[in-house]
Image 1 (cartoon, rainbow, N blue to C red):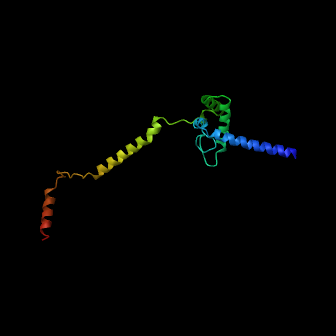
Image 2 (cartoon, rainbow, N blue to C red; image 1 turned 180 degrees about the vertical axis):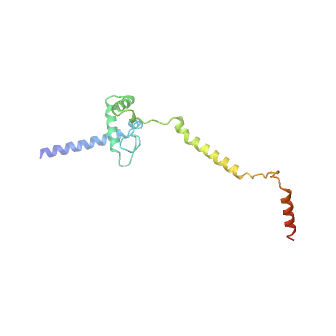
Image 3 (cartoon, rainbow, N blue to C red; image 1 turned 45 degrees about the vertical axis):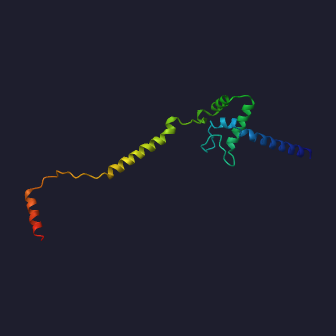
Length: 150
């Protein structure tokens, strides 16, 4: 009976410890570091994700980050540790200026091309005043045929 009581007490203490670190894992300090790391569960997000059931990979890594911070490591040291363990692919690379402006530039160029094409197609085509020369015999035959129409 004593073993059961001890096991039950340990289980309650573990649940309480997890509950205490849950707020630490979602703190701004941890999310600041987690936002710079990719989650490798396949969600294609950073580790600061807050999916409703909670990503177990992110939770595990956030708990690891909490322990690293408690041991006195700085943000950069934690990031360096993750790079050393998982390679440079674990870092989230923010888009540069071209990555941010690229879609807007493409949209503007596309809109300009559409407007140019519409204006070009809406312009009336001017008839050429000097058409091809008409053969005088053909002109005489046309006059003769139209005279017979009356």
